Length: 265
Image 1 (cartoon, rainbow, N blue to C red):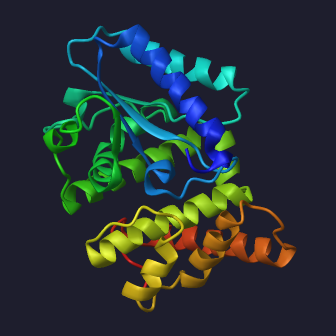
Image 2 (cartoon, rainbow, N blue to C red):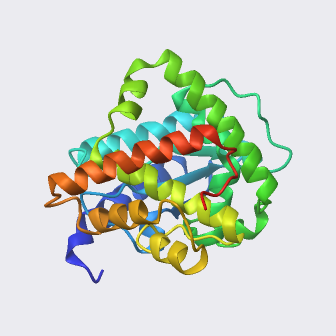
């Protein structure tokens, strides 16, 4: 441990790891960390811990709920000071052919996003439990699979916003953190579609776009979102907050008017 600011994060992830493995070792195939902690862009008090728990196919139907309970218990034990993602798959969920007929609910979105999660795993995933070779056993999605996944997620988003008013309000009136997350997540996928390459590091994506995708329409917004995030959302001027939110809404509208694999240039 080299950064004392990350001490709580390592204590937190270690607590979950020990808790779930000691209880369910025979059921767990692997636990893989992705996202900011794996790409070294984690910021204490800002970032979530994105981890993926993969269960053996032989586990009981109740196993995913048991893993989720360990996640909730871990967050409660740390006063919810850190958020841990609730992504649990069976190994067969990740293999081809994959189901696409899941019911659209907030709790099943990760089942629709499997190609995206697989791409993150192959790009920068860190195995913290299980054999490291597990990543090589998982299929690496083609761009067409990512596009099909994004079409499903867009369909999901539209349906859920009609039935969950709180989500609709959040989208229309986002917090600064949600706006930054949305802008940088979109930037990551715009870069992917423009170059065929991946960059999941939210601190580097704006620079990558400037270097590799000249004329990117939302370059200024991506750079502002990066600056705000790297400053841990502190000391944001009213002017920058207004620019950010306006940029977020411009991006949202642009996305509505274009295919999921379009690039704003």
